[in-house]
Image (cartoon, rainbow, N blue to C red; front, side, top):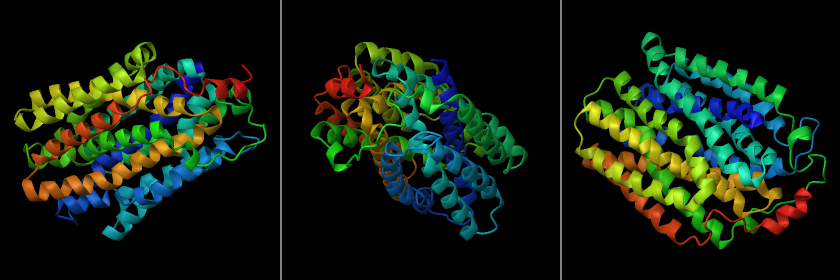
Length: 400
């Protein structure tokens, strides 16, 4: 488990960068664009590039053989580039330069995001992956807390400080991963083995498609709320920008506190069961928030939402991986991020349009509707998330 904690630094850097991006970039766009729908669209334009890169890079990393391993070459290229472009964002001089830096940063992150996440199942046996995912998401949650908490303080001091901090964290995380995670030593399948071609279409069986559909709809709800919540707090509840951003800390805090227990519970009782509990709970939270008019109650509900999101998020990625073979981990990681990117593309502009038409209160009504659709598709999945369907193939590849 020591390697899992070290691997968590990769997810830590990704989470802290995304949290800062979603919390503060809308404020940079606000002076140029007065429409919530346009801001929502601009917050997702980079995902159109990620949409094609994530599955392709995940698939390509499955077949990569180098002296650094299968995944590490993508980290060594993407992380330094992302560190440069995240620093440049607050120094934009126009809408054009702002969008350019946003796109370049997210393109750089697309290079290493799937390979970083795929490292976890690469070095972790199936029986421990849900727990391991809880650990790396714990690290990611800590990053989000730092982003929303300390990031708010840094933003008040100077809008560029949070982005500079994220850049430094990204570079330090890369050095830690490069030094302590050795794929040729730690991987369950030797990275020097002859690579096999994995077809994306071959991974899309009925169970996987239904699960990916559920993932899409719960990410529609989550991504829309995350991207537009700071504006919701500012315009609907009358909160200061820093107070609105800091309120998200409570969602992240309780996500972190429940990340490891959620992985343990998913391993014991089944991933599907824990995800169902999380979806129902988050639906109730999102449905209740429009009725709240105080910061205290808002933060209580966000804390409950963080617990529910842990039940969903900790168990979903290991669920997707467990349905396939050990040879397709990178490909399935790419598929997982493909649907999350689709949600990130469609959700903020769609929910922003609803806000333009019906006001900011409609944000959480739409989000709760997305959770209901996710519940419907997940109920159609027959796999319980506890047994491993691909056990014979896994045993053959791992030499067990």
